[in-house]
Length: 440
Ligand code: AMP
Image 1: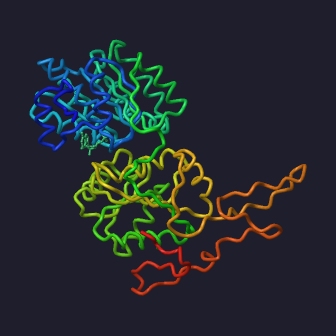
Image 2: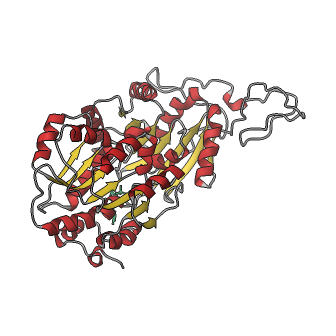
Image 3: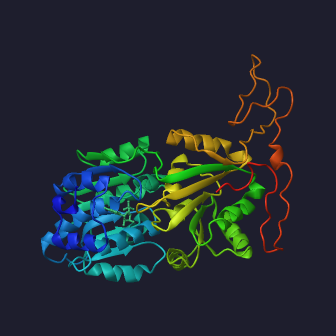
């Protein structure tokens, strides 16, 4: 069995890993660490949950510990850029646990917290700084730190930085770091723009790919449940009620939608919190720690807020809305089945989301099994007959609508669900359709 002992890591790190119960390197660690230890640039194609934080963190910390002296004031030895505050916090916490007891100063700077306090913290010099790009630029402008001594640059979840439009910030930051640095870039997916970005930042990198981009973790049991938009809340309540006490993350496309759903679920008696970009950093951290501690069972989140969320107890992911960026589906469901556990991911697909579903399945190269409802037939607006008599092609993956008539929506969905027993505080239950009930 490959162990951490053979990977050339500092003894104190090995000791801490053992204390954390991490004994066997994951594939990204096994394949990546030997190259990183030798100083090579690395392009890691890996999702969160694969152990990539340790893959870049352990060899980097090993080198930093070997310096044997404190960093000079305002300097930063290693810079880790993350797209969101939550991911930055998680990396910070992971690296701090790996390096516990070692003379290494690990700090985090993210938006939403006092910039003055952060400036003061940076004054003494930092070994490993984990930052979101926007806040880092603000601090650089204030001359709270310098990157002229930085030897390591890590871009984590780099594809998400493309999504959020961080490229400009990344360019400005990277220009300030000496070229003789070691750079590691991790990305779950490798779109063309990401390849270009990787080429401009990495020098002769080793490429380590542990799961093909877009391929969902095998331990996640996935399903799609066809429903209507109006029935999604009651359906969610049904699923959640079947797994009392288990943690679930619910993804919603909008901040407003997340709040609305959280209010409704709360009214129905579920213990719920919502996190999204409009919440203050404090509110987000409070919600996350309550969820992590199991005090709140249901976390309703937008994509950005849940990026990097790593809570092993998350047993279920519900895609209340399907993401319009297909790769985000893989990120979302990756919030479950972590740390060797199993997980379930259910996607609620409304009549207007068939295109998104198809795009997700195409990106994953696999169909998501149907566990409830029936595929929608797209109710397309009447389109003029094209020259040559071609009709608009049939959309959706259900049966082809009968010629001559308007495509009929699934009859099981035509009647609104009836109110169930339990009074006003209970969700409405779906009543018809043998396949319509929650199957999980
Ligand atoms: P990531 O977000 O990819 O860094 O994955 C982090 C999760 O994987 C955390 O829950 C870690 O505790 C866990 N992890 C990292 N390395 C290992 C390992 N070698 N064995 C088991 N779990 C690990």
